[in-house]
Length: 384
Picture 1: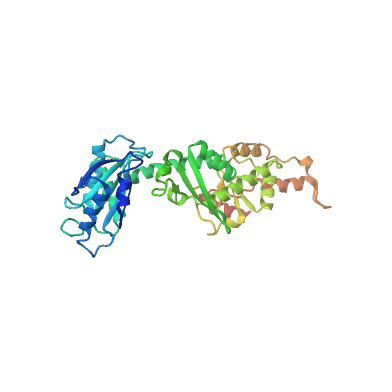
Picture 2: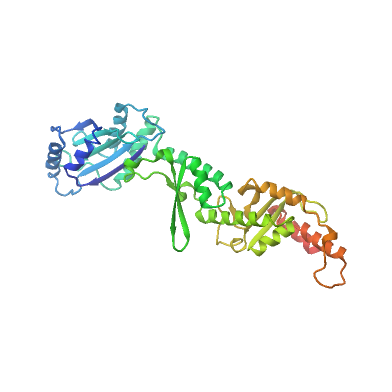
């Protein structure tokens, strides 16, 4: 359950708000209060609070909100139990004045509470230190005792769902505009932040049905990208879009891996080919994957490993876009070099066949092998 608690000095306006809620509020519990109207209740609370002049912020105010995952399954009495038991765990006793109201005007039903931290004997029973955190922990403990989902558990579920949908949308998006549109189709709103130095610098994802404009100032829906995953950063998404756009541009004008690799190299990208088995010279080797990344970002700490980025190899072509699997297949089919089409660059004693042989050897030479085979391949190259 979403919740909030803070200590402050209040006026009668706070009690009026609690008891109104556009005419839909319903007081479900009060303690040590004789008056039935907000003004009278405020005067009673202030009189008791003045018995302890050392405490300036004498009121504890906050709310507990039922998320959609719980919906309106709880009765008002069950909801009240959760609230009162949590308040008891942070120091509220039978000698503290309080008022609890259920509000129904917003999307999620929620309870607002106002508690006098000073009890009728003049003792402050509710400590202000970390009261928001302690109240949240109390709510979670009560929820677990009653078999209800906590806000943390609900948050974990939502973040997992957001990351799954974001990962899927990234595979079919080539820029941020497309990404926003794809996520919108999935029921999520992406809010981008930017600055002068980096351009787009941050992202917040909100589930559309979680939006609650009436309580937006109190509770901001959604999560930052850093909260959803510590492995996926905005810089990784930017690099992904750069790679995808470069590949799409180059594939239009190339017919084999040699041309493809050379064109991307001119644009500042590295292409590494991973084979399914140990590479064997002068014969066809089945390609398992192709890795592409900006040369300046590979092999250093400029951009570390991410959710889909490898700091030494870049991005896996087969994983960043399903359409690139067809590219790998078509390039592999066009890998044979036609000797008849090869012409010497400049007058030379080398024959056309010799030049073709060199090009074929260059094409078949691996740019990347599995890590376990790396040392073996280095030894074979030296011996050759």
